[in-house]
Amino acid sequence: MISDAALIRDLKTIAGAGHVHTGAQGIRRFVTGYRHGEGRAVAVVLPGSLVDLWRIARACVRAGRIIIMQAANTGLTGGSTPDGVYDRGVVVINTMRLKGIHMLNAGAQVVCLPGATLFELERELRPLNREPHSEIGSSCLGASVQGGVCNSSGGALVRRGPAYTEAAIYARVDETGDLRLVNELGIELGRDPEKQLENLERGNFARVLSDMHERACSAKAYVDHVREVDAASPARYNADPRFLKGVSGSAGRVVVFAVRLDTFPKPVDCRAFHLATDDPTVLSDIRRRMLKDAALVPIAAEYMHRDVFRMAERYGKDTFLAVRMLGVDRLPMLFRLKAAVDGLAVRMGFGGLHVSDRTLQWLSRLAPQHLPDRFRQMGARYEHHLLIRVDGEQADAVRELLAARLPAERGEVNECSPREGRKVFLHRFVAAGAAIRYALLRGSSAGGLVALDVALRRNDKVWWYVLPDHLREMVDRTLVYGHYFCHVFHQDFILKKDADAEVFKRGMLRHYTSRGAECPAEHNVGHLYEAKPALAEFYRDLDPTNSLNPGIGKTSRLKNWR
Image (cartoon, rainbow, N blue to C red; front, side, top):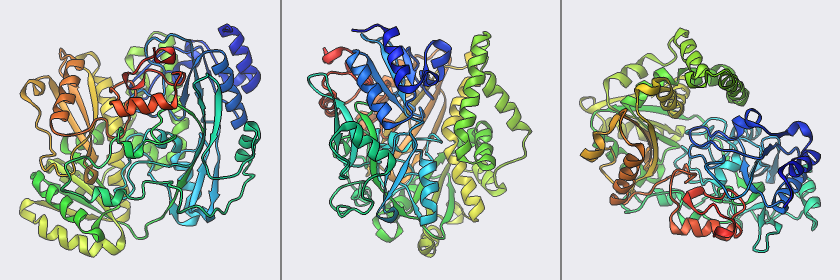
């Protein structure tokens, strides 16, 4: 086995010295997760071409090092950063320099390279009046397209289901320890691995394909599945065997060079409704009625509890304003700037003060009110909030249903203007970051933050959370939001100062299991959840030598799984 120094020299020869980072400060932002996880690495490498990615991965495999693949590093469970102790050195390969989106069949499908983000794909499809599987990211802004597929991310769009494809090109380490290129794109690229990757990156292949209806490039049957509101199982969750195939759900166990995905017609004349009530059974009734009627299945249906509504209003304001004023495409630059400030604070001994977060929070207080007046008033008055977006042609029927099922004595309905609609959904999307900000600024005066991600049964009528007494006593604040019609909820529990976070988490997971729920729903196991047997076996089949991202799902970290 070659030394770390020799491997680093080889990596610099391939990627260029400026794209290989070593040392604690140089790698800090790549080995620290967005919400969870931090570890050590021999080096972080940012390849500039697909051929370089192949050569870097091959060099790491031959050197006997662990590879952790990373794109935008927006995951919430630490699945794309090192975590804990390994039996071999770790190299993180960050793919965000590998931009590229190729249109197929006039934009009906796309081939996305590893660094393509959801925003970039949305921008490329806009002139064609089409859109990608997911929006800008329901929990994290700036996510990569490929990361969504590899982690079976669900997103906010009710009709789409998890990000899924059976068409991709990737490399895996086989049983003999060799790196093999696997082309399942359905596109002829040649025979030699490097030539295939060169042709792929340059777009040297046929753009009109005849197998669109033969090869699954999205979860086509999901809308029928989610409409089965009397089924005693969740609509979607990370360990669902139906969506574990090839790169889909692979969670860094292979090196992905490109994914082929369906795109979708962009809705015209969307309408947004804000529903507010103190009676959760009202929302249950509306969900069941709209899903049972195929003509009423909405584009999106997002839930917020009043507590997270208020917290996002205060602690998510800076992110809200950044997106509104600068656009999603500027966010990666802002994240890098924030990471640089945090890194400088650490070097100066002020890391525990969270300087960038405190500064952004202070600046946000100086800005004028950012939410529509009626939206804020309803947010303060009612406990439960549902944000629904529908096609224009659905609007009349939805108005009629809401008038009948949510009369004035049981709550309130506001049909938003287009501008208001964009704001209320953005308010929902900044909620996850708001909980993190709140916990950071509370510091030692609060307990830990336990963020859980759960898929309830489709027929679960008691979806609002009543915690068992012994767990409720450990909680200071409970923040609940999620993809309501899919019955996927994100729950951020801010614990009391002396509460044991691990004990609380284990208790909640047992509670979920007793209710027939699945956890995690869409954030994947990362280093926070234990992979269920079927998921662990899927990882082992993909990576028999345990060379890529070992330890996720609390699986073995040892070479050859021993």
